[in-house]
Image (cartoon, rainbow, N blue to C red; front, side, top):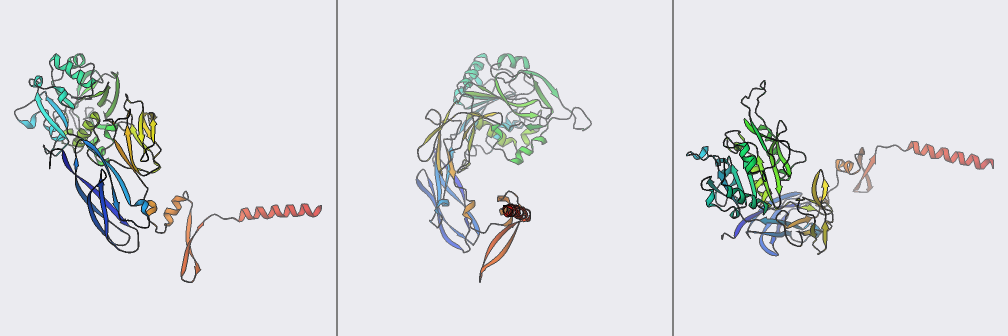
Length: 461
C-alpha cells in the first residue's frame, strides 16, 4: 500500500425485522461514488448481523459514501450515508528541557508514547524530539504543533519565531517542571501564556487527615470541545490522578482564554488561549512523572491525542458521527469565524451565524430535511476547524413493524397509565385495544344534568 493510501474499516449492522429467515442479502459499500466492498448477510427472523468491510482510501482528504442493501418493501432505510476524514499526519516537535541518559526518565518519554504508541503507522501524529541546544536546527513552520516540556530558556530569535508561528496558525503546548522560572516565562512568553505564572505548591501527603493531600483533575462546565470525544470511562478517571506539585497562576486572564481542566481546588490545570489564527495551551504541572502520576493513567493517551487534533483543527481519522433527519447539527464556533455555509444534498445553501449555546459560541443548523451528505464551507471553501462533510440519515425506529409494547405506547402517550386487552374482531383474529384508566362518569353526569335543566326550562315555556 502506498504512503498516500491507508486501510479503513467500516462496521455494518443489518437487522431483519421480518418473521422469516433472510439468506444472501447483498450489502455494498460505496466510497466517493465507487463501489469498494460488498458482502452477504444471513439473518434469522427478528435478528441482526454485523460485518466489517475493509477498503483503501486516499489520505489527506475527506471522503463520503454510503452502504446500501438490496431493495425491499421499504426502500427509504436501505441506504446509510457516512463521511470520513483521513487527515495527513500531524508533525509535532517535542522540546525536552530535561533529557536524561535513561530515556524512561526523560521529560518527553511518556508524551512521545502517547502521541505515537507504536511509532510508524500506528498514529496520525509523528513526534520529533530535540533538546534546548538542538532547537536552533529546527524550523517551527515544518511542524503543526510544538511542545515546550520543562524548558528553562529559549534563544531570543526562537521565541520570536514561536510567537510568529502561533499567530500564523501554529499550536504550542507549555508543560512545566523544576527547570521553569516564573519570572523568565512571564517576561519571555507573555504574549503566548494564558496566565502569568505565580508560584509552585507542593502536596506531599496521601493522608486524608493532611491539608497537603495531592490534587486531582476535574472537567469544566460546559465541557470543553477538546474533551467531548473522550469516553465516559476516561472522564470518570480524572479524579484518580494525583498531583504532588503544581504551578499556581495569577487569576487575571491574558487574552481570549478557556479553562479545559481544573484541579480539585478549582485552580486552572489546562488552559487554552486563542492568538489570532493559532492556539496556545498551558499545563500547570509536569508532563512526566516528577510531579504527577497522570502519564500512566489510561486517559492520558486519548487526552493528549485529542488535544493535538483540536488545537490543529484536524478531525480524528474515523467515521464522523451522523445526524438524523429533522435533527439539529451543531459545531463550536472559533472566535475568528463569523459565518458558516452548509449546502444540503439538493444544492440549497444556508448561511449560519454563531449563537450562544450553554455560554459557548456555536453554529446550529436545523434544515436537515433530506438524507444524504451535507457540505460545510467558510467563504466558499473548506475550513480545517470544521468537518468538510457530515451525513444525515433517516430514523430507523419505524423500520420495525412489530406491534408496539405497552411500555412504548405509554411513553408515546406521555406516561398515561394504560392497560392493553385483546378483543375478538372476527373468528381467528384479534386486535389490540388500549384503554386509559380514566373514568367518564363525571362528564356524563354533568351532561345529563344540563339536558334536564334545559328540558325543565322548555316545559315551563
